Amino acid sequence: MSPIREIDSKIITATVKRLFVEANTCLGADVLAALQISLDREESALGRQVLARMLENAAVAKEESSPICQDTGLAVLFVELGQDVHVAGDLLNAAIEEGVRQAYDEGYFRKSVCDPLTRANTGDNTPAVIHVEITAGDRIRLAVMPKGGGSENMSSVTMLLPTAGREGIRRHIVEAVLKAGPNPCHPVIVGVGIGGSIEESLLLAKKALLRPVGQKNSRDERLADLEQIILADVNRLGGSVSAMAVHVEMKPCHIASLPVAVNIQCHVARHGEAII
Amino acid sequence: MQNYRSIKTPLTDELCASLHAGDMILLSGEVFTARDAAHRRLEETLRRGEALPFDVRGAVIFYAGPAPARPGRIIGSIGPTTSYRMDPFAPLLMEQGLKGMIGKGKRSPEVVAAMKRYRAVYFGAIGGIAALTARCVRNAETVAYADLGPEAILRLELVDLPVVVVNDVEGRDLYEEARKHGSVQNHNGQAAAND
Image (cartoon, rainbow over the protein chains, first blue to last red):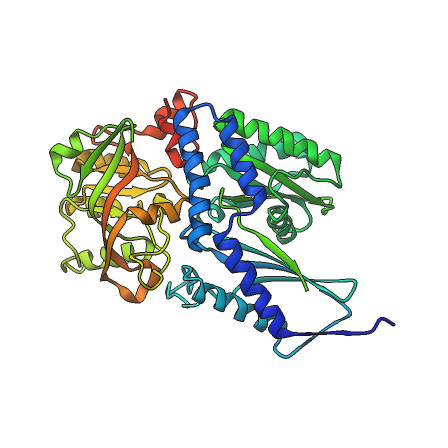
């Protein structure tokens, strides 16, 4: 039997706080590189000017420790909890919520969470959206994603006909991105989840956005191809740099179903991770 | 900046009539922030026959909810939110004299028609460059609905906010024209105004 490793919940709180502060103020090297590639490819002078301002904004935000975007998002976390870990102190979720609270308070980030009916702001950007998966080992992996509302509003899940096939899936995803039009902040990253149940397809789409921007699906060549084809379609039909990347994840589904989820991510693609 | 025209709020009929879809603008002067929850309250106020908490005649509303200001700073990061969510409320405010809106994304045909009727304009600003945009804000004070937190109505003093005219008083729509010409729809419409 493996020995149980004890992890103080305070370490989890401190790590969550650090990750959200960093994610909201320092744009990742992957996103900066993808924006630079877009800048190099953009043909219009005005488009290049806009992309240059995005890069300048990232530099200013980092230097000032200011939020890159005023929408510092819902706090979404994916937690991989090693089954040989014992969390000592606060409950895991409570420790995470406290980290979010501290990050959004001390970072002077916008609190963007409210009661759905009264629209009263909760005041501290909690509750967070926490997905926990039990894994092997004695470590905790925390992946954070402050997710903005504008791009989330342009996201969807659709139950396609099982006979739609690869071509039907491709067409659906391209249409979903074009339908979003100029509403989300371009150039976007398109997270796609194919298969599973209705909620699992959405989780796959969101998890796909955690991948470094532009890194192709390394486990399934069919999906890596689909990513390339959809990206080319979107940029051909929507403008040269409508999207920086398409990330597709897939799982088996019911014989009667074909769920396809599309989760749009704006160009301020904030994500970070740490292993405790 | 090249090819930009500088204008100052409040907006008059004459000034609005001189703005055309695709024009690049540096906007200065007083604007008011208002987004979803504030719009609902403004509508309820008008339905009750009461006065709005600020003079909307000639005014410009910036669809924005900024991050809080650090001590010693004027404002936190700020930028446009997606405008279509304010579409159900915009015609009523234009009827009251609202002349300009700043946001990102497309407007409904009803809002485009109301802009023509009331001689108002819609400006697109670049989303996701909020640390830079904050530098255009020289003063900020809360006007109403402080309890809404980031959705409170603020009076901002802007200097040279870069925007593009998306919809003008003639009913033109920059996104529609860009789409029909097979041009682009990206960068929140900024690049839709491309050369």
